[in-house]
Length: 284
Image 1: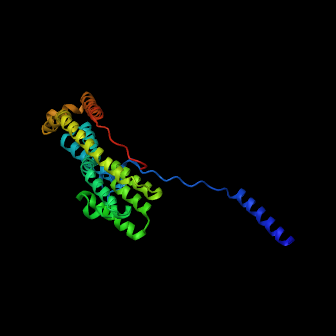
Image 2: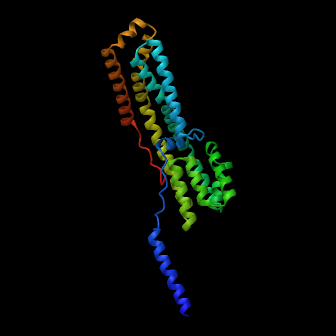
Image 3: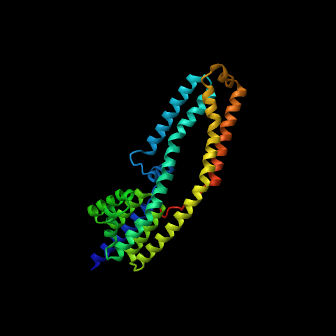
């Protein structure tokens, strides 16, 4: 009996000493994705990493700067051309993000109706999502087909939902996925009703947003033309070395630099004022 007491006391002392020497470390927080990574995910681009995107921007900027400097002989024009070319991939990807969000906004009401019908028909939550890979809207089928593959391979519903959420990168998809996640964990008999209400809300929001976009499109296009017009004139002037050479002086560089800054600020301000509210992502 004394041996057991001594052994237990020794083990307890050893555990206390070990806890003092090796304190318990808090779990690491998950690393948040960079802004470029989130933008690439929202655009549906999987083969391009943020590092490769930055490399592409630098390469385009360097080539454009060298070409513009060789054609005009004005360093300021070369710098402006290089900065414009370097920013062009980001602008193209941002346009693709907006276009993809618009396309998904038009498809989600039908997808949510299909999902609600499957749940009302007695399908389980994984089955209702898997069938969207075959019967859902055309542009959303690949993501749900990958979900079906992930779920069949692992059998883990939560992990498959996380992968689906990362592929969609869509605020509406986040709401649907989180609602299904909660329903799978705690149960819920009102999931079908919630999805039908969400579908009606999405259709109303899509109709209202379409009217606003159609009214503001002519204003945005006019602002883009106003920003691009002076640089198109400068591009035409670049064919005449004696004319464009006047910008090689300090005063010419000041004029070009001030004009570039004014165009960028005015264009960004126009986009800021005319931007429609974007629904934030949930738990992304």
